[in-house]
Every structure is written in C-alpha cells, then in structure tokens.
Image (cartoon, rainbow, N blue to C red; front, top):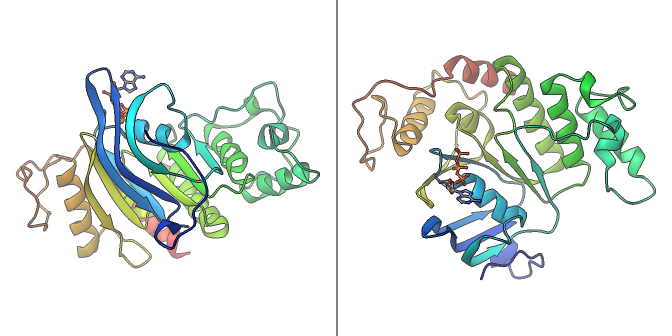
Amino acid sequence: MAAHAGGLNTAEDRATVRIENLVRSFGERRVLDGLDLSIAPGEFVALLGRSGSGKSTLLRALAGLDHEVAGSGELTAPDQVSVVFQDARLLPWKRLLDNVVLGLGGPFAEERGRAALAEVGLAGRERGWPVELSGGEQQRVSLARSLVREPRLLLADEPFGALDALTRIRMHTLLRRLCERHRPAVLLVTHDVDEAIALADRVVVLDRGRIAADLPVELPAPRRHGSTEYAALRGRLLARLGVGTTDTTDPADTTDATDTTDPMDTTETAEVVGEERAA
Ligand SMILES: Nc1ncnc2c1ncn2[C@@H]1O[C@H](COP(=O)(O)OP(=O)(O)OP(=O)(O)O)[C@@H](O)[C@H]1O
C-alpha cells in the first residue's frame, strides 16, 4: 500500500518525490497503472495529459488527499506540501492577510504573511477582502498562502486555467520568480503545451495512468516559439498527447502525424512568455 511520508535519508532517496509502481483504481478502472516518477529538490516538472489520463488523481496522491482511493505502490513525498488549484479557494469572510496566514503558527506568522503578499505584488492590500480582487489577484493570494509555508513540494492543478492570456503570462513570470527564490520542487498540471515548455525544467506526459514521455526542456532563455528546438520539443509533446502535427522530429513517435489541426496552439502566449523570461 502506498505511504505518504517524510524522512529522506539515503543518497538514492534524496529526490523530493519518489513514486514507484503506483496504482490507483476507481472500481474496476485503474486510473494510475504502475506509474514511476521522481522529482529532484527544486526541480520544476510540468505534467501534461489528455482529459481523464489521471493527472489530478496523481496530484491528490502526492498531496495525501486520496485515503479513500484503492491503490498500491511506493510513494515518498515531503510533509511540507502546498497545493494551488484552478480556483483560488479564498475564504470570503476573511481579510487577505488572514487568508494567507490561515492555520500558520508561530510568532512571526503575520510578518511572514505580509512579506508573502508583498512578494506577489499585493503589498498594502492586507486588510482587503477577496471579493475586491480580480481572478489573477486572487491567484496571487493563493500563491502567497502556499509559499508562506515554505513547502518542499508545490502542487499546482491548472492554476492559471481560468485566467485570460495576458494575466496568465504575468502569472508565469511571477511563478517562475517565486520558484527561483523559494526553490520548492514543483509539479504543475496543465493542458497548455506552451505553458509547460515556458515554465518547466522537465515535461512529463501521462497516458492511461502511465508516463508516456519524460522530456527535459533544454532550451536557452528566452524560450522562443520560433526556434527549431522549441518546435521540435513542442511537436514531440503534441504527438505524445495524440495531437498530430507536421513539425515532429521524434523518430520514436508512433502517433498519427498527419493532422495539422492544433487545438492547443497558444503560439502568441509562448512568444511573449519567452520575452518576459529574458527580462
Ligand atoms: N472520485 C472518483 N470516483 C470515480 N472515478 C473517478 C474519481 N476521481 C476521478 N475519477 C476518474 O478517474 C479518471 C481520471 O481522473 P483525473 O481527474 O485524475 O483525470 P485528469 O487527467 O486530471 O483529467 P482532466 O484533465 O479532465 O482534469 C477519470 O476517468 C475520472 O472520471
């Protein structure tokens, strides 16, 4: 049976996340089917996968939120895990600072909360209410609430999925900066291939409960959509997602590469993100 535990001792176990042969089932259906995955300290991993491939199920397992789900395998994750969801999940009856420090103990909780709000660009808004914020600002508070706990692992389940394109770009820049400063390991679930390439050190594709591709993002900043390397990586990922493209250069791809329709095309976004990363 899988365990959710801290205590990483040996050199081999220095990974922040170590998953071996993880199985999770709903009734007869194996949603995670013998999954293996490691995430190193400070590593930013993006998780792509078609709808229903098991991404959220994996996140819930890592967050220790799946005690009712049948399963087996080995799972090692730190105790200090923070989760960011698509909706900010702020308590509307609490002021912003109180939302950030909710449940946070210690004499400096309020001071740390103020610093966290400042880090996400909301200094001076401590006494404001969630209802006064835009969607992007609410997600900033959600990020502040997560990072003020100094997690060793940050789990993010499509955190920018509900935001408009420009706000999403700003949030990419912010998230990248916060991660560089706090250095948690990150597992980011996204449907957006360009978001994955823009942000991650490594992109993992989940297919029917197993890892179908595990590719490092070895692109220099800024990660320009126009570069050959960018297009090759993007093509490989789309092919692994079963979205045919004509620009794949991966000889290992066995998926149909004749369909040029690309429902995930966010070219413009990726280009601007690349510019912001360079700044
Ligand atoms: N509590 C549950 N009870 C029964 N089936 C479930 C439960 N949670 C998830 N499933 C099923 O497990 C499968 C994987 O769900 P999961 O939410 O992990 O997929 P996903 O990859 O995150 O999908 P999406 O991208 O659409 O959010 C789906 O077929 C879903 O219906």
